Length: 368
Image (tube, rainbow, N blue to C red; front, side):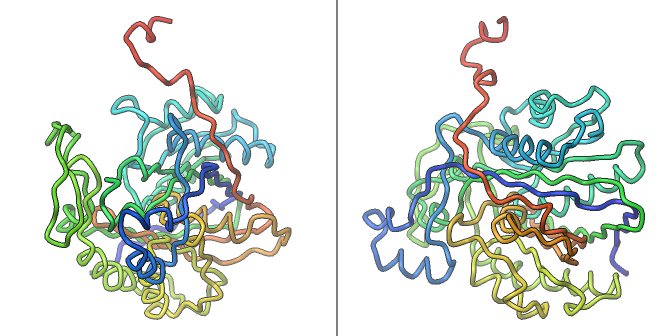
């Protein structure tokens, strides 16, 4: 059966912005806990030297809000013209309501703007681009927003050496707008058999108990049911097998090859995985923006953050034909293509601000 390609005409990416917390944590800081030799090997394999950690009370939506405010102001976008907001994340502010509704209020958007969350992690960005572009294409609105962010450091067991240095925190905003002759294409893939391979087992409605103790696992790492548990070998196999396979399917469905792209915006998983994917899909290293060294793996935010870090501040008006690929939790992956104009991409901003109104510590707070 041929792949189900989404062809979305008349929509383009009109800008990207990203925001990170101010605290930068060098992974050498974990040396006392895990040993310097382990840290050195980890850094060599992943390419990570530091990560960003959210300030107390700061959420993924705070980081994404900062990016969105800046992008809307820089691009002089009329708030009433935004017809859709998607918040792509697995780090919501609350179990209810959707965090997109909170962001809708904070960004002062119109009541005619739809807003919803998209619950994916490392594959979320191209999924959200495809969803937002598809809805924008059939609406009367001129603009849509994709806010993708995570505070992964809040969901990691600090004693789990396999994940605590791998993930960092960031938020982003991508502006979509109508333009005749433009197009976004996407291919979405899922292998639900791997749903256990990247999972937080406790805290949802299937297994609501969260007061669980640490357990030492067979690989020597310490983990707990209320924090992220990752089957590294299965995730690695999926990443270097299924993911390049999906990109090659995308090539075939779109009639393109690696030579047709100026840029490959890949999820910033780790350097070893990216190297193998790049080789298999024919992507030259100089066409792959990387931000792992300074920011680590920021999950849903990693692709726009990498683009912000690499292209922000570049005044070139020349569009770059870009292939996007996100992959991870689910297990899921997606490939997409669109043109990017470097001068419409902002460099990363730093912020420790949080939404104080959203800090509801007692029921009386809801009556104010």
